[in-house]
Image 1 (tube, rainbow, N blue to C red):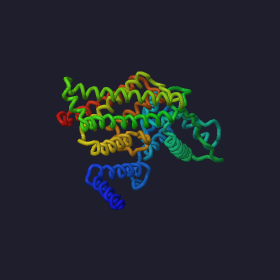
Image 2: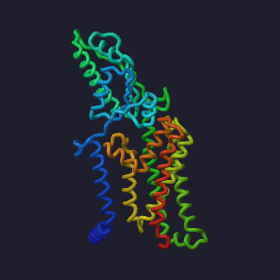
Image 3: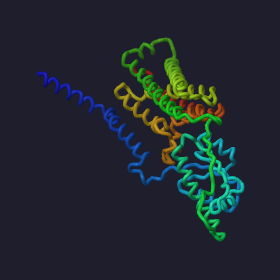
Image 4: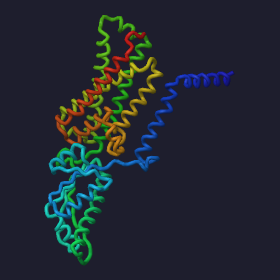
Length: 384
């Protein structure tokens, strides 16, 4: 008798799973999508896909034949995206995360490098500014730069009649990691806490949306509708509470990171607060959109979790967005979490000011309006 009951209960559970088409689709789609994403990013079947080119600013203060040949070689390299500009512009771009490395070629580089390569002497010094969160890319750029310098200097020298003796390194480098300011070391914990805070605030948004669905099921929604208050007051209060909880979570998590891992808001504190509030508002409307997307918790939770995982995955919360392929880096700016993670990086270890934070804040508020409008349009006000 017990085995019969056991088999009947198993059949019931399997039947309930199979008949819930959305749950079946979500349970299969999530691991397929996430597995495909990481396989594509880290190699797998996409080894032949074009990788992202490393943005490098080159400032040629020499304008000699050798330096022009060097810049031309770097520009033609398929691994690099060369950007012109001044040293001040390059420093700002590296600090803001727009450029990975900046190379400043000094005056007199060509003659000094040619002499140092074959005759010894004092080699010229290149100034390299780099984003410390891009360590592997910095190493790659250093190797590519050495290759092109050797080719450029060697070609110029042999073209002029050649030389004798052994070869020496024709240049030295002075490398400076660009963070909030000189003397402030890069703290990788800043990005880690930014990504995880964004992820778990979004999960809180799921819970806020699911609570509305549970209120419908329990009958609380009927009582709220019968009360002498506007339906927009009911929804607005839900959005406001979710926003306050999101801001609370962000401050507590970054407070812990500050005390234990020395993650500081090196930039604008007002910018940090603005980002926290804007992301909290976006999360609250995301939760309302979840509440409007399904009739039952069972039908909605799987879709909400999948949507959240996609937002976190494509927004650079798990792995930095700069390792994405070029096309995906650009496409990820259509994801609100990309703006949130970049904004938190900017106001913490990058040390960027309030004016810089206004761009990400505006983007997050734009997503807030979009999600809120969709939620209000889809919301079933008269549903029991």
